[in-house]
Length: 117
Image 1: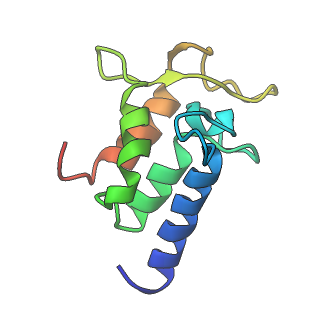
Image 2: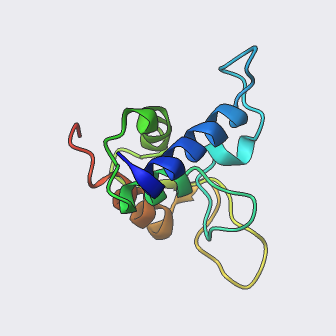
């Protein structure tokens, strides 16, 4: 991986590291990055980094493993993804805590290029 794509992956990895405490790597600093939220807004969402990196052609980058594993934890037995959060407003992507067609769509788009699935 070279050039701008590498810089973006490294920045995302840096963001991921910044999402977890350095002294306690299992403790989250920015909880919104572990929620599957839609639509994408200023806060961020668990759906965004894997989707972005996958679109750039680096879905199998080993540094995305943890984010993809966390995303997989949101999948229900029927293969649908649970919507954890959405902003208040006129746009209703589904009910919080329930499967969402939008969360499912973006999760599938993010994970479809991973070879080890």
